[in-house]
Length: 135
Image 1 (cartoon, one colour):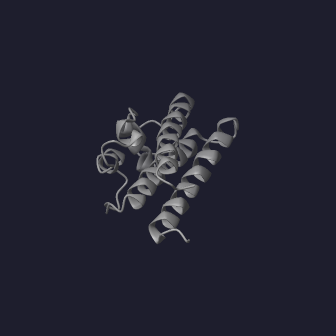
Image 2 (image 1 turned 60 degrees about the horizontal axis):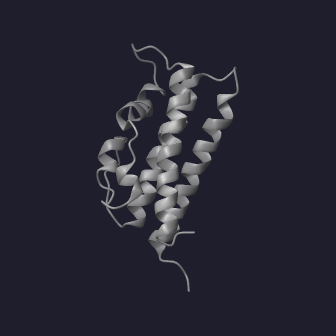
Image 3 (image 1 turned 90 degrees about the vertical axis):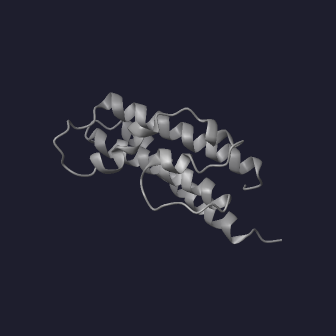
């Protein structure tokens, strides 16, 4: 029996999230890389993870980068809805890391924290989706 279309689309989004997270982790050890790239990839990994969960749950979501807004749409009872990551901090890298601003560039400490935050969101999403038959 084939999987429903929303399962396939959710798996695709989760794969993209995993790829972004893998790239961010790989870049952590590269001194020639600017931390802002790692922060951006981390934000993208978290955003795509959240959207994978929402697609699986068949919940419409806004096409925005606000991770708190997306997480608030995740059904109660999912581990992802209880994940205690500072999404406001991670959300800011959607724009702040891509364009010159008056703010200071991200630090290596912030890049490491962004990866850990993204990893927590990805792992909670992966666990939730596997537990619901995506695999």
